[in-house]
Structures are given as C-alpha cells and as structure tokens.
Image 1 (tube, one colour):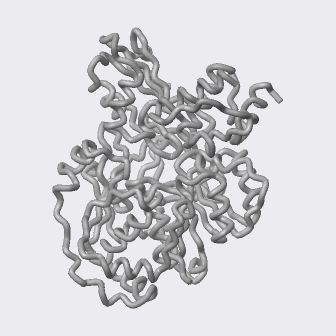
Image 2 (cartoon, each protein chain N blue to C red; image 1 turned 180 degrees about the horizontal axis):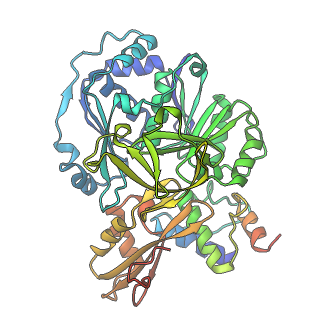
Image 3 (cartoon, each protein chain N blue to C red; image 1 turned 90 degrees about the horizontal axis):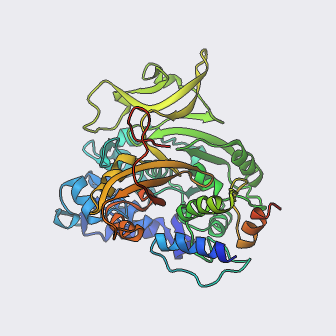
Length: 410
Length: 74
C-alpha cells in the first residue's frame, strides 16, 4: 500500500488511492482554506493545482475578525467553484503526479506572514517560485517525510511540495506528543524531518536511537550546539542541515552548522549590504510591499570569511520576536492590547527562554481598576493567535523607555 | 509541591485550560497536565522567577519529580 498521509494521533491513514477517490468525489472547490485537518489542507492544495485556481491559506486559529481584516471579506461570503467532474479521469498516483508537472501558469498560492507593520501581510507564489527548491530525483523517491510544521505556513508548504512531487508519504509530527513523535518515526521508518530548533529541543532527552532518519533540516532560529550534538546521538545516520528561508522568498540558503554560503546559481542575486542580507526581487514571491529591485530582509549577518564568502546570522534589524520559529511583531500585539478599554499604555517585549528561544511579555498601564489579567487575555484570544499573546502580563505605573524615548524591547 | 501546583495552575488558567487539583512526582506536564511548548516556556519563566533556576537549560524535563530534582540542584 502506498501511503499518502498518516497521523497516529487521529488514527488517520490515507493512501494515494484514498486521496484520488476523495479528489474525484469533490464537487465544490473553495479558494479559502482554513482547516485544522492536515489531510484536508493538502487535498485542497492538490485540487487547486489540478484546477489551476488560486488557493489562499489561512491559519486554522485565525478568528473571523482577523480574516475580515486580512482579506476584506469573511470566508462565508466568498464564491465557491464548481468542480463538475473535471477530475474524474485521474487514474493512478503516477497519473496524478504526471498532471502536477503541468500546473497552469495562472495558479497561485497565497499565505500570510507576520508583517513589519501591524497586520500580517499577504504573499503570493507561483508554481515555479514555490517549487524552485524542490529536489526531484530517483534518490528522493524513497523518502518518507516527518511533517513538523504548520501546513499553512511557508516552511510547511515547502516540505509538502518536496514530498508531493516525489510521491513521498507524509507523516504528521507537528503538534504530537514526544512519545507519539518517536512512535511515528519508528513505525513509518521516517527518513527526513524538517523542523524548527524548538521542535528538536522538545524531543530531548531521548535514550533510544532511530537509524532510519537520514536527514534533519532546521531553520527559523539559531541552532545551538548542544541540541545538534544530542540529535546526532538519537539519529546516528542523519546529516543535519540548517536552512535560511522566509515566507517572501522561500528557501534560499543552506548550511552545515551555523555558517552559510551563497550557492553559485544565486551569485549576484543575494548580497550583503552593511551586514544585512539583501535579496533580488527575481527570487521573491509577489506582494505589494516589494516595490524596489532589492528586498532588505532585516536579517543581520556576520561575515566569517570573504573568499569564499561565509557568514552567520546574528540578529534581526527590525523588532520581530522569534517565538519557537514563529515571528511576532510587537507592534501588532501592542495595537491589539491598546484597543482594550481601560488600557492607557502598553509595552510588548521579548524575554529569552530555554524552550522557545523567546517568549512574549508585556507591561500595561491601566486607567481602570477593574481591568485585570484574565479580562485582557479573554479579549486578546479573539484578536490574536495564541503564540502572539503575551505569556507574562505585568501592570505598571509607567512604561519603561530607552534613553531616546523608544519603547524598550528587551 | 504546593508552590509548583500554583505555578502550573497559573499557566493553565492563562490559557483558559482546566486547572488541576493535585500533582505527583510522576505527573508529566506535557502528557498528564496538557502543556504545549508555549505553556512549557511560560512554566520555565515562572519557575525561574520563583526559584532562580532554569529547569530546561539542559534539555527537557519530563516529570514533576525531575523538576524538583533540578530545583534541589541534584
């Protein structure tokens, strides 16, 4: 049996024939995809590819309010597309994969990334740009993927396409307990895992070894040596790679350890200007925010050697806070808190943390004594995704600022 | 143990989750109490504020007993 998707936490096992039959039975395709079930998200992306229609991915925990602000309308007001037996002729897995080689130029995938100002921003990719880094070959045909990202985020989409276009099984690891994760790795003989350093850190300590894993990929945060060494013990046959990727550009750089270099095909398209990584627009997806020829990533690097060029990431130029690989814009959180009745001032900042890298904290000045922490939390839950809500809330008489009068961020 | 339980319940309450009435040394924050990585992160900060020990600095601790060992400096 050829597995397409498995999730042991839900006792879910879908082979390619199940997928094909589900696709054939689809009557209506909705462009907006907001679903907690990974299989249905994947199926809907495949449907969009086959139909050549844009798909818009929304996080499963976006509230109706956030969706309205992001898209201008609510999902229920959008028009559905009649599939009308267009896909009834798909015969087999091979046939399906063959059709995916001829995706319409019109096809787009749109997702939302934490913007640098206020609301998350919209980024769209074409089939060429989203699959630019998919490696397809006989070597990859035997891969079995441990899926350790949110399927509506860029990193998850890239893993999905890498697996899909090679016809590889996808096994859910994201959101599972440590025991379930190791059980999945062993039961399905997983060979490849791509995940954030936080995901890997939460697997430790572990005394068993898992020899089937050949490749571990990580990105999104700095990877510490201690975790890398522990992973080498648990996965003795694995090669560990660090990647640099963003929602705007996808995967661009890969490294061994923490040192990055620019691949020859990107010479002249990726450069370092005043210690900041800068990317040419030809490597980017489409978004209103890219009006210039060069996109400044805000990622600050330190040059290790000039020839050949090697560098390391040190910090973010802007104030984005990295919480376990999820980027949080403190301004967006402050805006949401400021809207609450009884709040007169607020400061959102990061505190470094051994589990997630950073956690979100806030200091609030209130002008109404009846306002308390649980009232604030209840309101934020309707406005912000869980990882953006401050984990520590402190009431203060005034907000601490830097000597130049800016809000202190750490 | 009582202080730890209070800290656990603060984290649970902040997320609108059901509070617990008792914990034992074998309780696992992730499997028995239902903590996810955000909760664990908050837990470390609150324990550090109370005891001045970062319980996760050498990797993840799995049970309440292991947390207590860390706090006792074993």
